[in-house]
Length: 240
Image 1: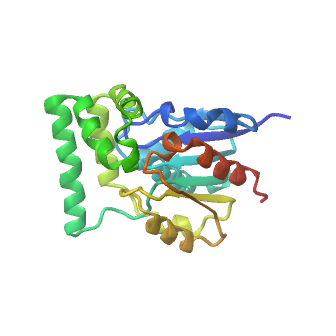
Image 2: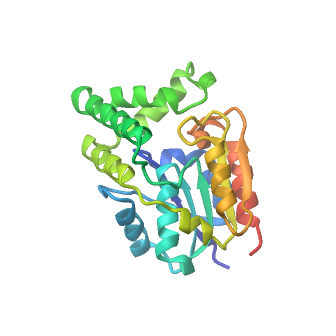
């Protein structure tokens, strides 16, 4: 019997490196494909690109920006998604408030660093708030994230920032999720905090599997792959 397809959607400036630490475990039961968002500059375009290349039915896991793309895929083609995992992500549009203005400024500040000093300098700044404090002194670990970012261009960074700043509100999508779902978050994720994931879970008509990774930050698949794998395997084995 052929394995079910599992599409793995990385976040901002990320690639298969995010998923590699857990790929062996997931591949035991599923045919895994890591999606490349290319130069797409909107969440909707990213989702439509995925649907064009995806098999008729598939499981879907999205990390960070990839979680937002996963929700858009489900909105566009719910009949094709067999199960969905939302990891270190969010669901609300950028607010028309001081918080929204602060987010915009923060993202453009990073873009300016990338333009003026290069992707490596930007990534070194970005990663400071994206992993658990205890990992910041692990230079080889930090460098592995920076090297992943360096694969992408400033142009791609600019396009993905545009996609995130103009992201759709996915509240109604969450209210319609009727497939086995996973909500995965991390103790030290300052960008996508635990409370945000709790809010998402409350909107869902079917109780999701809840997985909170202790001691990890936003990059939890790389920080604690064993704990992430455990949560994802439970989700993949959940009955319909």
